[in-house]
Image 1 (spheres, helix red, strand yellow):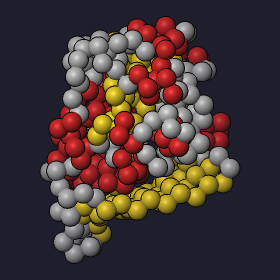
Image 2: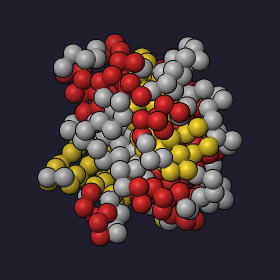
Image 3: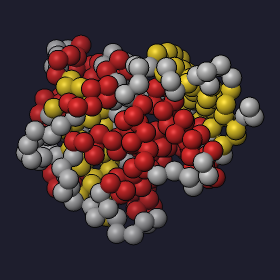
Length: 304
C-alpha cells in the first residue's frame, strides 16, 4: 500500500465540520483508546508527544512543539507532524499535515460539545482570543449555528479587529464582562495562565467552551465559573490530572472528581437539563482525537 501524503489545502477541501463531529462521536463508540502522552518543558516552550491506538481504527503518533514566542516573529506558534498507521498490520498509511489535523481536531472537539450542550437557539457567540484557533472556531461554530452573530474580544484590540476584518458582520467587543453577559456561547482560546473569564459575568443558559489551557500552570476560567456550571470534558483521563483548568481546583478541593459529569465515552449524558443551566466544556484534545480526525481526513482523501 502506498503512503498518502495529505497537504493542508487539498486535504481541507474534502472536509465538512458537521460530518467531522459525527466521525468523532462514532470513534467514541469503539473500544476505549490506549493513550500515551509525554510533555517536556523549556520555560514557556513545550514539546508534546502523543500516541493513540483504537482497536478498529488504527494508530496515530503526533509530535507538537508549542513555542509562544514565535507569534512575535509572525511564525506559527504550534508545529509538528502526524503519522497514521494501519490497525491491521501496523504499516504507515499516511502522513497528514499537522496543522490540518490540529485545526479540525481542536474546533471539531468543541463543536461536538456545543451541538449537545448549547441552547439550539444560541444567537450570540463570543470568542475570547484572536489567534489561529479563533479562525477555526468561527468556521466550525458557524456551520452548526448559521444564524448566530459572532463577537470577538482580545487583550490586544487591534488583533481582534484584524481578525474581524476577514469576515462579514463580526463585531469586536471592548468590554469583556458585558460581552460575556450578552453571549449564549463563550469560547475561550487564549494562552493565559490566569483566568480571563469570571463566573459572575455568566448569564443563565450560557454554554462555556474552554480550549486554551493545556499545561498544569494554565487556566482560562475562575473558580466561580466552574462552581456555577455543570462540567463536561472530552476525556477525563487527559484533562483532570494534567491541565490546570481542572487539576488546580481539584487539588484545592474547589471541585470534586464527581463534579465532572461525563466525557465523550459517555455521550448519552451530554444533555442540557434546562434553558437556564450553565454548561461548561473543557476541550483537552488528546491523541485519541488526533487519531479519529486523522482517520476521517484519510477516508475523505481516499474518497475524493
